[in-house]
Length: 172
Image (cartoon, rainbow, N blue to C red; front, side):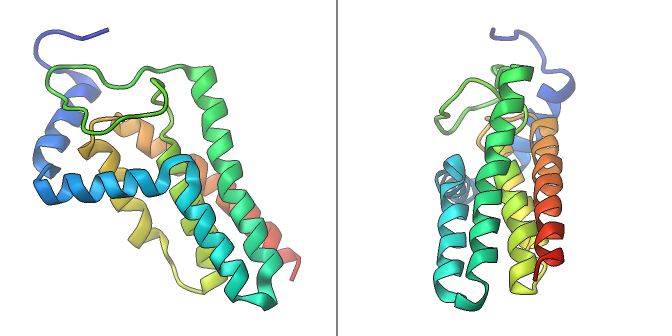
């Protein structure tokens, strides 16, 4: 349902964020991130690459890769329960197609955060600051999520990734 009038609440925050962050370069980058993160496929592929390269920890990479897909699946399950529609207001420009009309939580934020947490443990580098903020911002730039969608997605991905990472540490 298209909301009329001045944006309020999260719609106003989203519209302001989009107007502040949106440029030709940021939209191009956001679309690239969107395609990479769709259905967690890019993160899964990177995990498989890690498994192929790091033979000593192949099993851990495969478990981490499966964890990324599992986090994505968890976000889809939550979406189907919550059923929050995507932003639909004249002040918000939708700049990319989406596979569903459901918004909460952001599956891109979920799988990206899970990948960042899990792959940080395997690479020995904290990937969260480099990977998570750009993906969260991209969902706002593209106008396909409210701010709480991306924050909830990041929290869900962090939870799933953290639980699996803890399990991997216990089973060397």
